[in-house]
Image 1 (cartoon, rainbow, N blue to C red):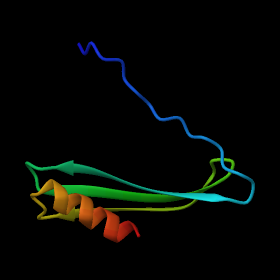
Image 2 (image 1 turned 60 degrees about the vertical axis):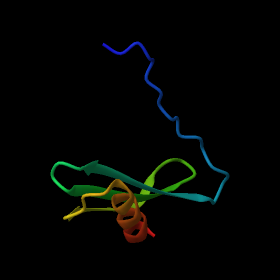
Image 3 (image 1 turned 120 degrees about the vertical axis):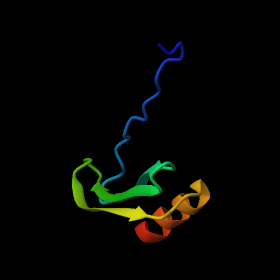
Amino acid sequence: MSTHPSTQRKWIPLESDWVMYNVGLEYSKSKGLIGGVWMLRNEKGMVLCHNRRTFSGINIWEDAKFVAMMWGS
């Protein structure tokens, strides 16, 4: 059991007519896989558009971050 409280980021509403773009990833060094996701949300938090993808053959954390950010941008 962890003695540290879990921290969660709370979504903060945007100004009217603004959108927010997020990119995320999960990485498995043992399998050499990353899963990437991006999403575009409006000021109400409604997802307007999103995509996800898996990449293989990536064995370095820095490479995983780079691939996910380049794909999602």
